[in-house]
Image (cartoon, rainbow, N blue to C red; front, side, top):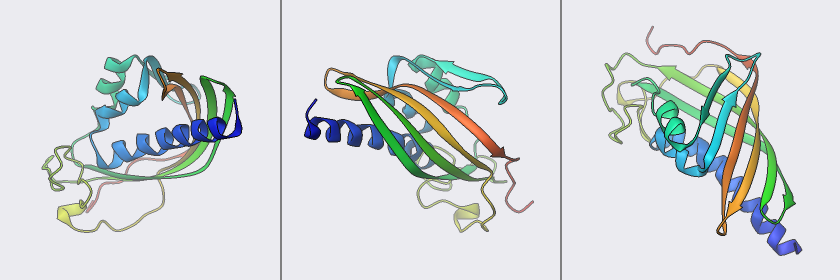
Length: 170
């Protein structure tokens, strides 16, 4: 693999890392399934709660089940992609999650169809008071290139810091 091919592979994988959280926060959460291979999986192994979703249908169902009225923003950093072969790569990336559940009865105040406040969302259509992140951790990813397109083969959540999701106004 020449240096330009390696750089393009790294960049494609970095975009997947960012697109994953963008879809969770600003788009349709269930659409993250399309970023995975058909047999791809996401897991939060013990000492987490042991959740695992495998295959695109299970991934779409899992990520699409977020509570109505949840507003979240994730900050990604320290994305380190290692190309391990012409069609394989791994990555580690760090994240912070800011999240709040709102008493909006699931109304779609961001008008984007997700009920999460959307791109311009917030409590009652306005700004939510900032608090500390509810999660700080990292992802361990494996990628595969299929027919010239890079996809997530697996994503493991490592969560050393976490707490309950607060409720806005409560």
